[in-house]
Length: 180
Image 1 (tube, rainbow, N blue to C red):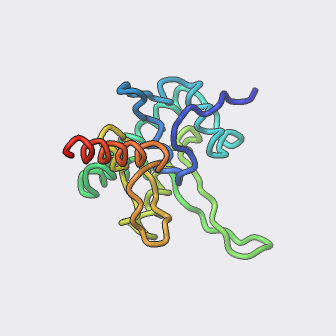
Image 2: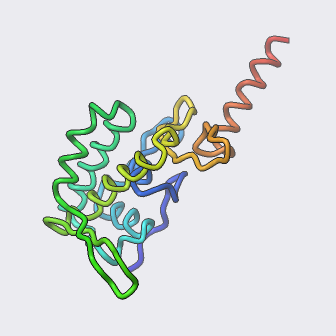
């Protein structure tokens, strides 16, 4: 069975931010992809995790716990979110391995239903290690989406120039034309 199409306006972000982006606003109404197991199926498929993990109630519960923890860390502060993110990370570990291709790492989980949640929390640590200042919330006033700024000069402000960026430009243009 294949997953339904992903209805979210912003996809393809690193796993931690993609998990945060399972909640978005559409015409002033908050949407939540993870309001049921079917939505979890869509999210797992969108991130290539559907073959590794089962979309069930336990996985959904743990994934929502990770989303809440990441939201505290990203939208609040690292100090506020650290304990919650650490609580998710406590359910897995990285095991070092030696393969025919050389050294490797394999994630292991205390319970497989923690896998997607743990991978998202671990991914957040990797983003923090690489460039914490590039983890951003969209500057759109009603937007709740997040992105990892990969622009050359690191000045991206919008989840999407076509959506939030265009609305901001149109709003500024309207304000200027109204003044004159």
